[in-house]
Image (cartoon, rainbow, N blue to C red; front, top):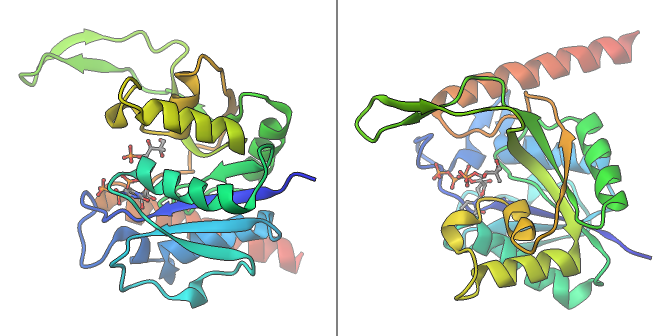
Length: 242
Ligand SMILES: Nc1ccn([C@@H]2O[C@H](COP(=O)(O)OP(=O)(O)OP(=O)(O)O)[C@@H](O)[C@H]2O)c(=O)n1
Ligand SMILES: C[C@](O)(CO)[C@H](O)COP(=O)(O)O
């Protein structure tokens, strides 16, 4: 029987957010970002096996933040893709080719149970895997390199990729190995797992996800995440008391 693996890249430094520690350890709604993200994944997939990618010199990590019983720490790499590749090496040692691997940024603590469930089911049914994404909602401008508009892009059919993204282990391993090979698309273009899978000529399914599955990237995202998480907690309390 195939198993579910969760890979959580959490080895970034959070340069754009700034702060005195990596963004995954900043407190949002009373808990570190990493704790929120892992709690949400655990609520939906309590039996999954977790590979948590952490920087080798990470002094902030506390194992008490991990709710999973079956988990391992994996060394993060220079870029996000290298962290994921290191985690896949750990899966290779213990998993099977058709195991499902779901990759989720630690920096997306607001992912909902409903989106997790729809993404999981879509990935199980799709030989090319699946990702959460949302249709582009703003008008998109391209700049001319000097601060002015060069043109307005046609946004029809454009989506913003989110995580989780989920694929069978063998497909994801092959895709990332090929993408990183000397004749592959290269690190700069592997900004998510789907881009590597697409480079094999495969077509991952787009699963429409909630727009509040934000990635904490800039300082103002911390406030947004605080509001989203606090709002979810109020709804949960109302639901439990009714
Ligand atoms: N070498 C790296 C770089 C990033 N990540 C993870 O990949 C996710 C998405 O990356 P991003 O939002 O860019 O996070 P940071 O790299 O931390 O942010 P910044 O680029 O602002 O430094 C994050 O969960 C981050 O921890 C990782 O595991 N290993
Ligand atoms: C994977 C990702 O979250 C999809 O939107 C995103 O590309 C990661 O962010 P980064 O800043 O490119 O590392």
